[in-house]
Length: 186
Image (cartoon, rainbow, N blue to C red; front, side, top):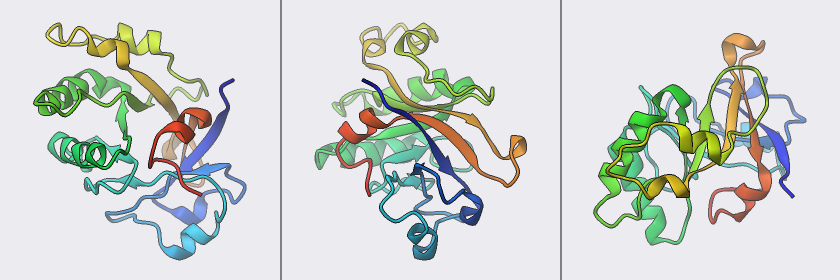
């Protein structure tokens, strides 16, 4: 059985509701959460987001102004060498290009692109992108087998401009996140 729950992230950590069941704190960059920010959510599941490609984070923010494809690929390869999984966050509109670019960077034995995606589509509907939807997105024909290994573990469906105060909300498959080595912490 899949347990879908809301997960919150924010560049303004104090705006995240204290009752958030799961949080995605920023580990690095301008909006890195402090130890005080993290204490508010003691004991709750969390998965750290890196915007600078720090391999210790479980989620890599692959969008303009954050990690680039090379940083994500290097971090993923380091994590794989340590037996750790990765989740790549990207907008659904950028997914095809990011998928192809990441696949090209990891084609030298890195194990192919991430099988775990957190897809942003700001439609205010909390649903998880099924594998069937991701598999229908255009994938380069030179990578025909990779589409079978895709999985969305989360869907960011609402963000700052839609909300007050400013935070993002995702629906995540908590069971899947729990099974990914090194992604989810308490």
